[in-house]
Image (cartoon, rainbow, N blue to C red; front, side, top):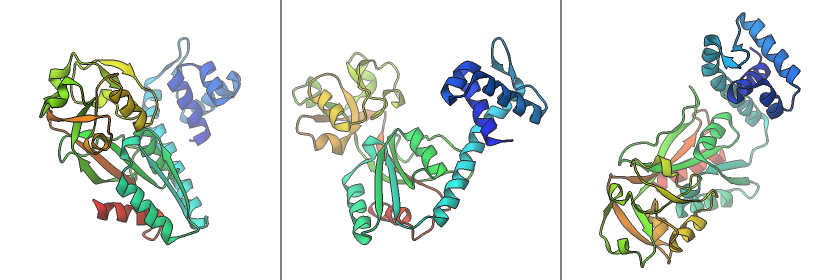
Length: 293
């Protein structure tokens, strides 16, 4: 199956329309139709019903494989490219709350060891980082989330041979409030008791939907990826947020109330491919962060 045709197939499946897929791919609608027809001829079965456009049972089966096939092909291409590329590249992807002083220190150590090292840091959401590590678009990923003590993060699985996860840091979880807020005097609080409170939903920093509590209502949504802005919104009295204890403790305009229930920790995990070479900068950075943990 031609990867080019698989990408077109996925675009139609995801948009539910040949014309919408053509706009996404910047093709003509007839080109999209021809490519889907070529894939159907190759497989010997229709993949879509028309009017309305919907996946056939065969198309549903192909869709389950197509994403993983394209991820693995991209990973193979990146691995071959890395083998012939000049040394000295380190691209680190991380979620906003995965940044910390130990990460900054480890990066400083790596850069001091090689003056020619080209280093790039990219902040993104954790689903993108998982896939970018799997495809080799970035060399190393750091992702974070709130989970029960000793539990790993629930991350998307890009298929066999994908990134391995290593826990590198756990910290306390608190409800961030202004120092004058009535909750600031509490020694602990249960999240279920705060169903009537005003919360800030920050899906790119601390996704509200991933908290293991039902019934909490966001009063304000922040669509940026800057943890400093989120902390400032809380300090300004615009709503509450669940955040890592160290971040709140370092902010002069915030107080942190420990979460009593459910039991949670803020966990940071490092993602890397198992095929990485031991002396690569990414593996050196992974070793430093593992040692720090």
